[in-house]
Image 1 (tube, rainbow, N blue to C red):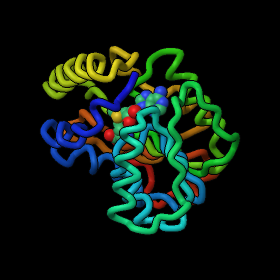
Image 2: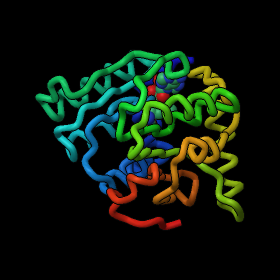
Image 3: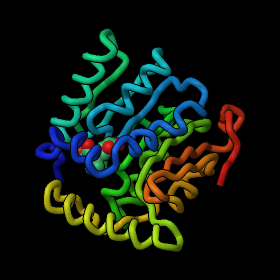
Length: 225
Ligand SMILES: C[S@@+](CC[C@H](N)C(=O)[O-])C[C@H]1O[C@@H](n2cnc3c(N)ncnc32)[C@H](O)[C@@H]1O
């Protein structure tokens, strides 16, 4: 699996397919959480979520883990160009999260945007468990990803898009998964509770805020669905 070859084209391809909707999806719940101290971003990609996080919370410390060196370079370049002195606050870690051992109970915010869809079955369960163990007792978890509406023409449309996207990413990035798996039961098993969910692009993408229950005191908005 490698997103290196795709990395320079990723932003353009996303814009052609989805316009700005996926970026709106990434940041939709960001304003809902109290200022985090230690953030883990897994599969950050080219740095557009990271930039918004640093703009909103300039004092945060971030570990940014990605298996693609090229994506990490783009992310590093973006924050450097657009935010200037981001100093020591971001550590860019070139790691495969399936092999990486994160520190235990370290992060009060975990972010997995459009990355859990690269995993399926036991591997998805293991990744969520590992990240859950790296979260503090009062952590929040931001998750943006694709999804399939439960009925109607939107459901058929979403299934068509997903089939095309999985074919594309299996060929170009050699991802392991061949279909979308729902991480919801694994997040619940780690003690996280859904605080907010918003849908985008006629229900094909979702933005979720999950909290460990003590963290709900810090959540501004209540559950919406
Ligand atoms: C589909 S891209 C999503 C990028 C970005 N988060 C976004 O919102 O568009 C998936 C990202 O996850 C990274 N990734 C995929 N599998 C990974 C793994 N096993 N370990 C670490 N990063 C991984 C890829 O390198 C890529 O940057």
